[in-house]
Length: 315
Length: 310
Image (cartoon, rainbow over all chains, first blue to last red; front, side, top):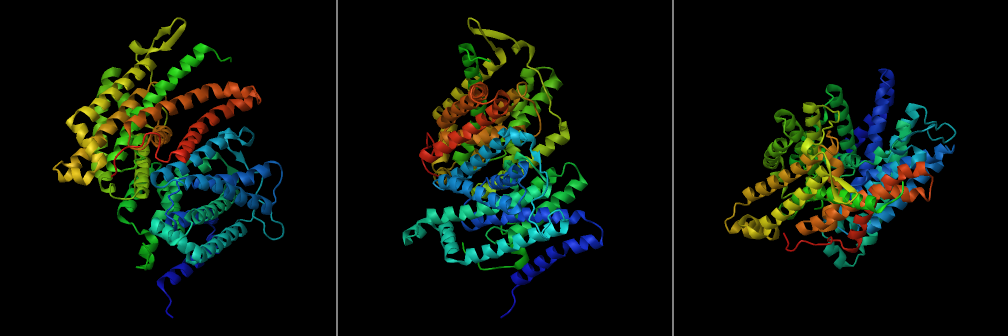
């Protein structure tokens, strides 16, 4: 058995990410631990979106909503002095999965532009709900009194430990996603994307499959939100702003949709690009905007496709 | 604050005025969607460009009317430029690509106006000859400027209706919406038609932005809030339908304005006033999305589905 370019690229990527904390410590640049942790958190959100966008063809324009729900699921218990991480993160996943169930159950009745718009509408509703929560900071948001506590050696206040926790979660979710898209369930989802009437004609009740995928993606998005709140130790309704949903979507496209690992690269490249450009000029968005357009117009397959070369893909 | 009849009437007119602005935006967006099948998130940027250009021209010429009159063709030009340079290649792409590429355009335009005019909000005042109030009913004064906006909106709606249903260009637009392959086979230059329609939509968005200047603040990103609401309008009204855009705009304008005005005092009777202060406007903002979700749930095609298929 030959080792494919894909495997090599994945192994190299994993090793590189794992090496960030020691290298940052050696070169005395702790900032990079922070930066790459942030990158991986967004990568988790982007990978979860890719599950429904890339494999299921569900163009959800409201994925940032789950980031917000997850963040509030950490912030609100913390506000009342409950800082148990298992509870907070569990709540983040449960609450966002529940929200995804409701949003999905309604949105999946539509398709095409209506689906894009209705998912956007739900995210906007939650955004304004966040603003209306005066007790929890309203539109200013609120500070987190401290990071989630897990007891024992799992002390998230230690930057490197928090970093490896995030890395572990990302790797686990990628492994889960990898199993999922290759499973019977994943095949049905992909069939629904490539030819819905045909998949229906075979006898699948697609709604349930799509909704399940939607809920899984939502739950993972919520976990990413919980991580993000811990990362910034701050949370605002801006986590749910529609431009944030656009950014996550762009990470998926940039990395290559329907590739699972691509969105990780998309998150790395986009956030590093933002970092570099914003150091160059305050007006970095005037450069990022056209880059985005060019990527959409000309690099349809995404960076992952360029990296690993041609790969048989399902249409 | 008590809710009086005159207040309700005044807020209803404000709702109508906001609805008119939404309609000016929605008309262009829904035409572009119906005919070119393009989801254009950057439509809000054209609104912003219109507002900035009108402000700049007003300052240069010293006349508000002249400023707006110059801003219209200028925004049309910007729209045509955007269409030719960036959007033309997107018509055949799927909606995901269109959403992302036009999202990129938003970033570009927000930064561009920030570079040219700065990030700080610009406040302009209503021109003197429109700054007064006049009495609609005895004891009910209403700002002249807002009334003028309503009148202009109604005039534009009538003109658009005449254009679409009574002229040759309108016939082509309708034909393009129902079957683009057929109309190009009949010898109509479809690319030119697309550019024209896009420019028309841009000019309407520019008009809305130019008139919005003196009421709201002019700042980078000002087009985004209204853009999302305009999408709500066209989804409620039925994508591609002008009639739907009118109805949707009025409904959303009313719901948003009346909700903002009256949810707060209504809530204050239930919860504490400071909490109602914050929750009222937020719930009003949520209400239109709730409305849209409900419409999509019961009528996925919107209230007035456009006829024909593309």
